[in-house]
Image 1: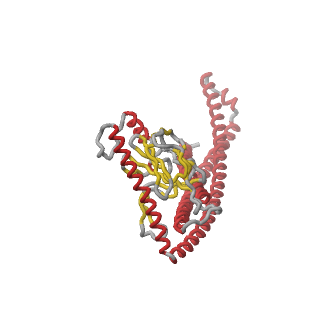
Image 2 (image 1 turned 60 degrees about the horizontal axis):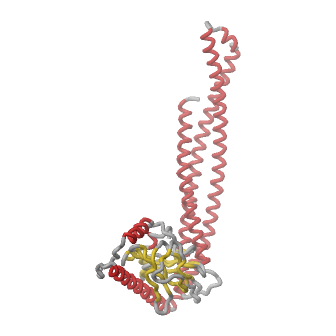
Image 3 (image 1 turned 135 degrees about the horizontal axis):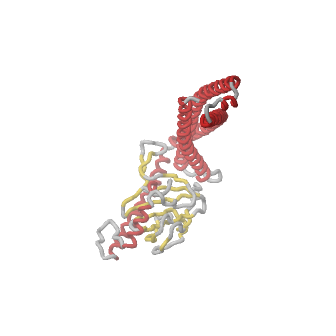
Length: 406
């Protein structure tokens, strides 16, 4: 086999290995993302759309339906990316198969010529005569070595042809599998798009109902804003009071908006900070229903809402749990609302609100994952929601940046 062909085959398979590794990683990432989105849709259906629950307010219905549509659109985009990746792999495989076949044919032709030449030579002069005609023992030995090497080389070429033929067969099998996977993905997308269309139609019907009674919708928005404002105000007030009390006890200024930390509290704060992005969820199982920051209204995108924490939907009877070790510094009790717990982790404070029963009291030391109380289930809409907030001293933090994959 010529060196150029050998180098060509080596290059082809080096490229195939590299591309295969890169594409396998990309496939794995897309598959993980797709599974995560599918689980999120299942959680939305289980926690927010269960048939046994009452429909609740139109505001609740609209927000949840909007969330499910957004997740399904993400799922369709990911499935499209998977199909496009498979399409690129299929095209690359077709090109590689064609190139490999071409090189394999050349290899076979060279091998056939070598066999033919070997046969012609053997008919003119036998191997024994070839050896006996040697001028001395050293030349006879060299000729014997040559015959052995020639036989081994011919055998090696034959084995290479068999191996490359098997690789070509495997590539064809892989190509067929990729085509089947692509067809399956396209079928999934068709089904998902049909479901999405139905959800959009449901949303439009609900939107029509809402706009027929805008005053009721506006009333629900105002009520929700007032409730959120009461909670935010009490959380801010309790944190400021805790800072004043802690600094006074340490004999420091009571006008500061930051905790004066002891060596022990500094260690806890540093450990908490080092776990940014790795903290556990404040519930064992759940789904983020509302994120942190400013977001658009589900009905009127021009209207903006502010969320100072995150809302996590979970199962009825679920318990809130500490995301890190710390000390209970306050118990929240919003007039007309539910209960909450504030835990201090050095100069960081985590707040767990919308609890019906509490398992801890002010002054308690809690450990990681310790249950703090049972989360309240709304009897009107059937939703079980934990409102979770995070602060550094008196500064609000985005919990999504601190809790793992929130």
